[in-house]
Image (cartoon, rainbow, N blue to C red; front, side, top):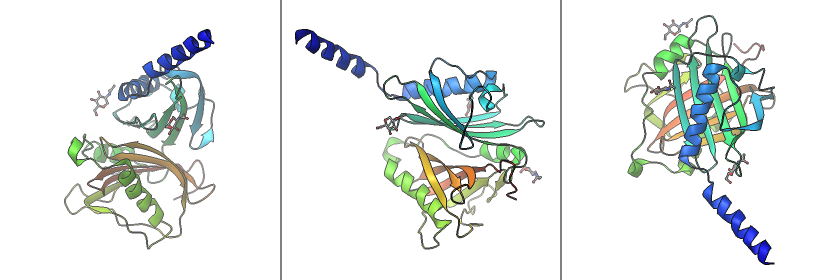
Length: 263
Ligand SMILES: *[C@@H]1O[C@H](CO)[C@@H](O)[C@H](O)[C@H]1NC(C)=O
Ligand SMILES: *[C@@H]1O[C@H](CO)[C@@H](O)[C@H](O)[C@H]1NC(C)=O
Ligand SMILES: *[C@@H]1O[C@H](CO)[C@@H](O)[C@H](O)[C@H]1NC(C)=O
C-alpha cells in the first residue's frame, strides 16, 4: 500500500513536470524547419513513430517531402498550447522545384513529442500555383503578435474562419469580413496591398469544406484549417486565417490538385 502510494506520488510528479508549453511547441517548429532544410525526418522533438499524412493521405515519412532537403525562403510558425499543436508555412522559391507547404504538427500528451504531422503540399500545376506571387505577397503582409488586451478568444477566431468556410456552401452565412481583407489563393491575390482590399470576391456556391482540422494561435489571431475542399474526395486543402478584432484580415489558401484536373 505504501509503495503504491509512493509510486503514485512519483508518477504525478513526473506528469506535473512535463507539460505542453509554448517553449515545447517552438522547439518542435524549429526542429521541423531544421529537418526540412536538411531533408532529415528525425529530430529530438519527434517521436520514433509519427502518423504522417501528406495531402490527406497516409505517407511513408521517409519518402515524403520532409525527406527532401529544401532551401526555405520564407517561414512562419504558429503555436496552439491548448491542443499541443503547431502550424508552419514554408515557401521554397527554387524555380526548378518550387513548393508552398502548410504543416500541422500534433504532440503526444504524455511524452510531448511530435506524434502526428499533416502536410498540405503544393507545387507547379496545383490550384493557382505561382510561387513568385506567394512569396511577394506573403512577405509584405503583417502577421505580428497581437497585444494581450486586443486578442480574440479561440472561439471567436475559429468562428470567423468557420463562417468563411461555410459560405462556400450556404450564401446565408454571415462572414465577419475585415476591411481591408486580402486572400492569397495559391499565388494570386484578391487585393493590391491597399486599404480597399476585399476578400468577399470569387466565392463559389455549393462547395462543401469538410473534415476540418484546426490549429489556433490566439497570440497571433491565426487559425489553420486543413480540410477536404469540395466534399468527400475533394481537394486536399489548407486555409490559414489571420483574424483581427473578430474580423478576417488575411487568408492563405493552398489546394493540391494531386494530378487531378482542377483548373
Ligand atoms: C524564419 O523567418 C523569420 C522571419 O519571419 C526569420 O527571422 C528566421 O530567421 C527564419 N528562420 C530561419 C531558421 O531561417
Ligand atoms: C492533446 O490534448 C489536447 C487537449 O485535450 C487535445 O486537443 C489534443 O488532441 C491531444 N493531442 C493528441 C495528439 O492526442
Ligand atoms: C506570378 O506572380 C507574379 C507576382 O505577383 C506576377 O508578376 C506574375 O505575372 C505571376 N505569373 C503568372 C503566370 O500568373
